[in-house]
Length: 440
Image (cartoon, rainbow, N blue to C red; front, top):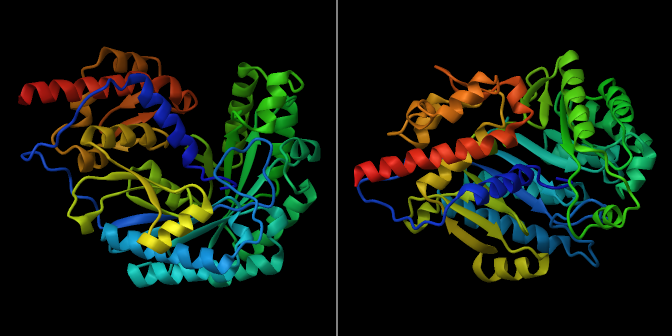
């Protein structure tokens, strides 16, 4: 996605869990089988190549030299076949091509992956198929080729409508080129074109940010993703800020940018359905909702992440999987073994619940009682959080709601979710420990 956007909340999730998770050993109890996973999954496809590396990006991407796309295509289709069969899912609910810059791939590669998926599992004719695109690799004819290959939703990495900011970010397109791509995309994917935009840039003011956003809102389609700039160690932008040559806005200024954007989007009919994502006319990303709802997903391609149960191996517990990062090494492993999975981690029921909690609270609907019961049949949300004084205090502050619908953040709480998670994760872990002690 530009970089897979779900990695951003996933990274925050990992940081939050490291802060509160005490070292522990966990052994599955035969009398407590895990809940059955639905026989479906979302599919993420990572295209690792870019034309250049942006100044702020540390995601798994490579500048190709003599790219053999036919070999990459063959490995993507083979790994998709292997992992879908390993999961034994009967249905793929959505497909997301991220990266990297997947719009650099040929429509033939996109079509080949989708054809393989449809041979291995049911892929509905109207399933959401998203492709991320950068303006310089997404001309009108190329976009039409992607649509013909099966793509029905586009996510464009605009990032800014200020040419100076685009140069600072190391982007290889101009504002005019971005708007031209947006216009073509809206013709080919009406109501299903999303745009990404970044705030909190060096030297950016609230007024310059809101001015650019106002311009974009007059031209965009029905989905907008807002991302706060994160300074990643090892990037050129990080080094410039560390040297003092680029001043970053203060945190209170960044918070004002975010709050102003939320209000501006709400005023023109957008629903904030997730911390960073806004939609109108029902144009929510069903693929990303699968992540936030804790559903299974299969990741293919170099560096892709996945969460699914490898049922073909007789397993019943969900695994976190990471594919080999470097493309050439990944392709060798796929040719040798059918997949390039580098790391597998079995997730305990508590670890799955932690992810369901952290990711579910990113959405405006939060976690319903019925949804929670899919993962914790014997421990309700009331059992977990209903008697906690700390949770009650968050409710009294107007940040959190626990009621007959479930557990969710208020409009105010959604903006400060990260500050609520330590309390909630601590309470979850304490309730789980109390339950375990009671049963023993």
